[in-house]
Amino acid sequence: MQDSKILIALSAGLVVTLSLTAQVPDARQTVPTPVADLNPSSNLPLQRVGPEDLLGLNVYDAPELTRTVRVSAEGTIRLPMLKSPIRVDGLMPNEIEKLVAEALEREKLFVDPYVTVNVVEYHSRPINVSGAVRTPTIFQAIGTVTLLDALARAGGIVPDQAGPEIIITRPNGDNSPQSIQRIPVKALIAGSDPQLNLKLTGGEEVRVPDVGKIVVFGSVNKPGAYPVLDSAANTVMSAIAQAQGTVQYFSHTAFIYRPDEKGAMHEITVPLGDILKRKQPDITLQARDVLYVPDSSGRRITQTAVTAMTGVGSSAVMSMIYLGILH
Image (cartoon, rainbow, N blue to C red; front, side):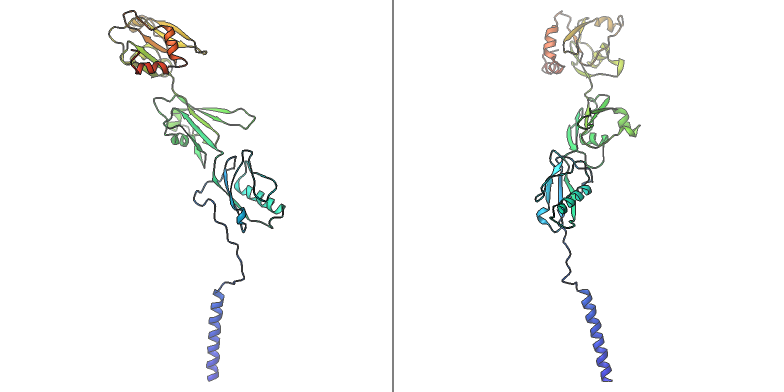
């Protein structure tokens, strides 16, 4: 009976011992510890790599090769202990991992190396937004970027300054001319055609041209530069209306100063009194026209002076209007 109790006790102790032993890991077993991610927080989307992008390179069990490397202007990266640079331009990170692993193994530096590559910074996909936007900007096309996204990054379009369309210029490789697309502003904003909201991948220039201006100065109540209206609405009478009419003593003969393609200024006589009385047909104005209404004294600014003031545009005239020199 005593022998049976001893046997049972020994059996129970053996079971407990085996259970505890099973919970202790084998000290001889080695598991490679992964190197910390060089880019743990940015969570950048996977895109093809280009020049000036910054890559995070991990080689397990090789801390001397774990580093960040900048893609050169030629589209290559260079690693220590490798004789030749590796071309990575246009490749995805997983494709670069294979090339680096093959190079390490080919030069007998590692046997079956385990390599990971991620993108720390993108610098090869700039999108330039300029023109009649609140904050012209250049940013990187990371992830999905649409035309509306790009305009939002630039603070949106300035309504009173923007023309009727947006011009997108895209690169077509080193030896091909750039492609140009024109997107109507109203249709894009209205969302009537989703295809107008183009997907941008980087390298594009998004320009919102300023609307053309017509300068009105002289004997009018509110001299200034006014936006070109739609189609045939740009006339002498509409320009006078935008300038809030003429002052009491204005000349019934006005003048349009119109620059040609070479910048030379041409004077056009305007029978303003007859136009206002509907005795003569109205005259259509063009962007960059300068409409000058002299006073009734007969004094007026000369065409030479207008040419000197406007130069290649109306900025000088506007400066003089705001300074009170022209009235």
